[in-house]
Amino acid sequence: MKKASSRSLQFGTDWTYAPAPESSAHIQFNERYGLFINGRFQAPSTSRYFASINPATEKEIARVAEAGSSDVDKAVRAARTAYEKVWSKLSPSERGKYLFRIARLIQENARELAIIESMDGGKPIRESRDIDIPLVAAHFFYYAGWADKLQFAFPGRSASPIGVAAQVIPWNFPLLMAAWKIAPALACGNTVVLKPAETTSLTALKLAEILQEADLPPGVVNIVTGAGATGAALVSHPGVDKVAFTGSTEVGKHIMRSIAGSGKKYTLELGGKAANILFEDCAVDQAVEGIINGIFFNQGHVCCAGSRLLVQEGIAKDVLRKLKDRISTLIVGDPLDKNTDIGAINSKAQLQKIKTLVNAGIREGGECWQSECEIPSKGFWFKPTLFTGVAQSHRIVQEEIFGPVLAVQTFRTPEEAVEKANNTPYGLSGGVWTDKGSKIFKMTSRIRAGVMWANTYNKFDPASPFGGYKESGVGREGGLHGLYPYVNLS
Ligand code: TAP
Image (cartoon, rainbow, N blue to C red; front, side, top):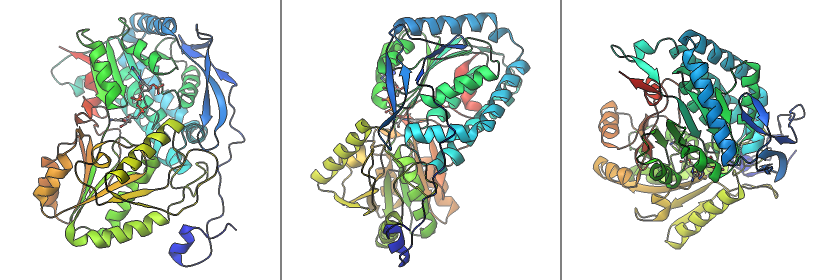
C-alpha cells in the first residue's frame, strides 16, 4: 500500500489506489527506424538517427532516421509516381477497401499502439487506449465510407483529387493527427508524404508497418521523420500540391510565408486559448468535471484545451473551492498506470516553456495555486496549477501554454463574458455551461471559435469538423468539411 496521497486526503481515509500498470513487456521496438518511402523502410541519406525518448523515464526507446532534403525529394517523387500510376486511377470503391482494411488493422493492433503512444508521448494509457486509438480507427472507417460517395458530398459537382499532399503534424495526438490527415487525403485519391513530430514518431512508423500489412500500393503514403528542417523542406518542395499543417501558430505563419505565391492549397490547424464559461445557473459539479477534463486531460497538451475559466461572480467562490478539491485528487505519474490522470510532459523543452509562462504569470501578479500531489523524481512533470487574480492582458491569459495550467477570471454579464472570451489572438474552441438553451445559442453564436461545446468539453467525432478562426488557423478538418481541402471541384 502506498503512503496516503492527496487523493486519500480528499476522502479522509488512509488508502490509495494500488499501482495498475499496463504491461509493455510484449512491445517490440527496433533499435532504429528508417524512413518509409515507396513502401519500404530505408536508411536516410544523412546517415543520422536521433533518439526518441520516453518522457516519463528519460530513457531512449529507439533511434529514428533524420531525413535530409534529398530524402524528402525521394519521398515526394514516390508519392507523385504512386499518384499518377496507381492511386488516382484506382476505382473509389477499391480505395475505400484499403482504408477499411487499415481501420480494421488499427483496431487489431489497438493495444500495442496505445502503449507505444503512452511510452513515446507521455499521455496516460487511459487516454491513448480509450480516446486516441479508437478515434484513429474511427477516422479511417469514416473516410473509407466517403471514398465511393464523393458525388453525394458535392452534389451537382465533380470532385477530382489534387495530387501529392505534404502533411506535417505535432506531438500532442501523434497517431490521431496522422489519421486526420491521411484518411481524407487517400479517400479523395491523393497520395501523401507525412512528417511526424521529432519527439513522437514511433506510432507513425508502426502505422507504416500496418500499411505494409494492408498491402497499400508503394508510394501512396510515405513517412519522413526528422526535425523542423525536414518539415520545412517538405512543405516548400515544388512537387507538392497541397500542404496540411497542424502545430503552433508561429510555425504556421512561417509555412504560410514559405508557400505564398506557389499555388499550393493549404490548411493550417494552429494554437488556441479556449475559455470555459460558467453561468450561475449551470450544474456546478458537472461543470467542474468538464473544466478538469478540458484542461488537465492529456497534460493540457491539447490545442482546444479550456485553459481559461470564466466564471460568473455569484458562484466563483463555490466553483474555486470545488475545483481545488477535485484537482487535489488528480494522480500525476506513470503514463502506463491505469489510475494516472496526468502523465508526463512531452519533452524537456515543453516543460521549460510551461515553467517560463507560469513564472511570468506570478511576476505579473497572478496568484498561483498548485496541487500538492507527489511527482516522480525522473522524467518531465508539472503539477496541475491554477491562477486567480489575473488580468486580461497577462501572458497567462493571452498565450497558449500547452500544459496543465488554468487561468481563472470572473464576469458579471454575458456581454462581459463574450468580450473576455474573444479577447485573445486565438479562436479555436470554447465551452458554455448553463441551464438555458437560449443562453447557449446566444453565447456560441457570438464567440469567435471554430468549435463550441455546451455543457460538455473535449468531445470529438470523425463526422464533425474542427478548425479555427483568427490565429488558430485556416480551413477545417474532419467530417464532410474535411474532404474539401483534398479535392478540386468542377
Ligand atoms: P510546432 O513546433 O509548430 O511543430 C509542429 C510540426 O511542425 C512538427 O512536426 C515540427 O517538427 C514541424 N516543424 C517545425 N518547424 C517547421 C518548419 N519551419 N516548417 C515545417 N514544419 C516545421 O508545434 P508542436 O509544438 O509540435 O505542437 C503544439 C502546437 O500544435 C500547439 O500550438 C497546438 O495548439 C497545435 N495543435 C493544433 C491542433 C489543431 S487541430 N488546431 C491540434 C494539435 C496541436 P519538430 O517537432 O520535429 O520540430
